[in-house]
Image (cartoon, one colour):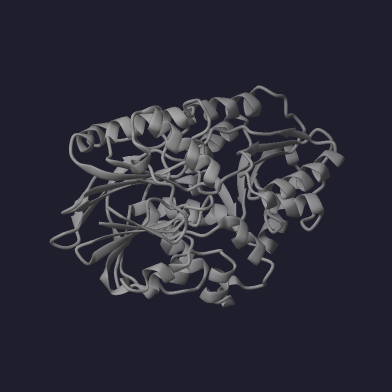
Amino acid sequence: MKIYAVSGYSEVGRNMTCIESNNEAVILDMGIDLENYITLQGHDDLEFISTKQMTVAKAIPDISVLKNIKKNVLAIIPSHGHLDHIGAIPFLSAKFNCPIIASPYTASVIKAIMKDKRQDLKNDLVSLKLNKKIKLSDNFSIELVNMTHSIPQASTIIVHTPEGKVAYANDFKLDNNPTLGDKPNYKRLKQLGKEEIKALIIDSLYADEHRKTPSESIAKEMLRDVMLNIDSKGRAVIVSTFSSHIARLKSIIEFGKKMKRKIVFLGRSLAKYTYAAEDIGLVKFSKKVEICTYGKQIQKKLDEIEKNREKYLIVCTGHQAEPKAVLSKIATGKYRFNLLPEDHIIFSCSVIPSEINIKNRKVLEKLLLQKKVRIFKDIHQSGHGAREDHRELIKMLNPEYVLPSHAKLDKKQALQNLALEMGYHKYNVPILKNGDILEL
């Protein structure tokens, strides 16, 4: 068996791995590097930037390591619908003559992305329900085991080969009290742990944090506290969170209704992920929420809100202070909306720890504070497991090899140290970097 660490092994994001056995292969994830992608957004139309330019800018994976096995790829299998796992599909998937197999929500998000880019998907798109198995050939089968994360229908992918199974846990969280969907399929994970798991590829983002990541239900209570227990009479209330975090948006809508405010979603990505969830019957937000997608529509709605600000709850894009997002445009005056002293700005998120995000958020918060608004930060719980979640998943699956991924060197070494603490030999916990090929 060969494991190709295509990308996502030297950074956070840009995830892509290939598993090869008996001259057949599958690709797991095909993501973008969000920071480099945002940098490229300085161009007017990303659609007209070539795949080569995107590769050189390290915004998408460099697939040159797969040049000799491209014809052997049976399927592309995304673990979930975040851009750092599916965002490179419009640029790279057509280079492989194979279907894309994804959970219903992930498939719906891929369709929405292609529609937004006005592109046709060249690959067949196959929807596979969670906890179901599909045979790709005599040698390969895959299953998507239900896993909790900060987006619906995330999965731990199990790749079945004659040389053993590979478990792909990018990304994961062990949430026993999710606010949308089911808790992880522990029964199946424990069953797999009794069988032969050759390798576990595992998200290492918080492997150095000695804790268990709290449940999304805790984040819901944090939201309840700031939305319902702080007086907002006469004030504008603006909430920004991850557009893909449908569970969080569900909680925001619930509390907005209790505040007796009309709820408005402002921004393209909010519309995209919401409509993708509605397309498969996961939620019915548009019956409770007005969704405004583009500039003129958003400005018209803001003009309306400003006349009666205490009757509305604004949910908008811009939690990472992206310059083209709605919240940034409100703060800089590109959208006409007067923020007044003691208006409430709620960041239901953490700052993704990249240089550009940290810098942008500092600039945005400075602009907001100049307007004397009240800022509520970090009303959030992560979708990524921490060190004790890693320990639990490794114990459950009992793999022969543990392969740290989705992080820079220090985080991967923290996961390696945990595995050594659990009795693994260093040989069985190799630290891979982008472009490496591990032969087992």
